[in-house]
Length: 289
Length: 326
Image (cartoon, rainbow over the protein chains, first blue to last red):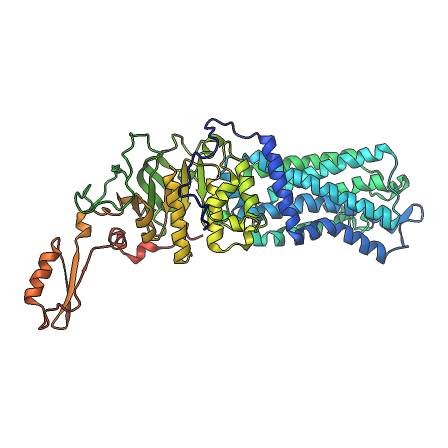
């Protein structure tokens, strides 16, 4: 190509350290996180969909239904304030479950996983990179959502540290569960092209039955029961306990925020996802043998 | 380059064919006998009813380029994937860099390079970023910028992988495969779809790797590529090695008897003979026209492709569809 092209490519060029130690697992997770974040930001369509979607939804719904209150005569709040917890829950689900289930399916299909498997990169570091990416995007997205809600729609944010503590554990546990379930779910789509077609409807249906777009108390009770099986309903309910006034608890079907049950359901899904993920994860395409 | 042969039974191929040719490959001083980089004995793998690999033997010595040839479905890809540690074997002994690929760990992977077919991954990273990230996974990598220069992509270092042409993308794959400074490099059909010039550039790159001491296992359908690059070729058919040898001697002397063809009385004739000069002299006396010329005279030696097609039976049913067409 150029005049400076060397005539041979010595295998032992540079400072030869034949017994150099393998790079550490944690350091490689950080390297992977850097590569993941860089690639994520360059997939513009994914950034818009996953990152801005909850904000856009909040803006649309709050504008259309602005001034209408949500609740009963006894306890009601402004629409945007009622809508925010559901959007936070949706955001967590998108950045963890949906984006991981799709991106890992695509990476399996396009050969990224196979290529990484042929290098000394440990699997733990690969997943570590994914988890760090998920945490970074979830945090940034939730922060932006809160800023828009508070700044543009005058949603009061809690001042009580106890509420923020609840927010923190629901956020972390919800993100962790979504991440693990996303990894497990990524083995289901047959190809990278079908990944979003397989994953998106699951997320959409859950959004409609879990009290994200419609007030949960207004749903038929059988639908509430179905939603109770899945994590999104519990994340949304946990977030309502953080952002709604205490008297709104009267609108919950059970009459309480059910925080212990929320923790139990999320941990159960985390464990199920872990077991299924470990058993079904493949580095290569399904048709690849 | 080497005189090592696998002890595999090679029907129709008597070992050695002294004096048929002098190797055209660059001369190399005989090395002290080192343990083989790859040692495979009686490798077997079955998919359901199909015995994909039916007892393959293969040795690759340090510094060699060995090409594995064979029709689709012959078991090439399965064999290579077992050597790379991607696939489990049913039976047989496999040693790659002294370890069993089925159980080898990160330290072993650090000594391998794999360039697979059909890559379109990590399309949003630039050439330089991809090589730099990959270098970080290895204990003792080469300088990423030097590797990018070595594969001739310096001018494209800042370009996203998705914007590269097929040949450039393939050279990026090689850069990613060699940045860890592997002792053994797997190249799977590396020049499929290249134009002739890009193919020649790529071959030069592979030769420079070999000159630097990298051992290379190449699978290809391109017989000219095998003839140009390989020190030794192994022809696989129906899951077995049917012949192995240098590209110049593959198939033995019998497969390389020159052929003389000419036209006499409007009929095309040909004859295979180890003494073509004598035959031509005889034809000049008996079959030449009034101008002293023999019509359509041609003396040819079988090319590697001719020998290969003879070895694999040139049988359309041997090319049935398999796991290799993914």
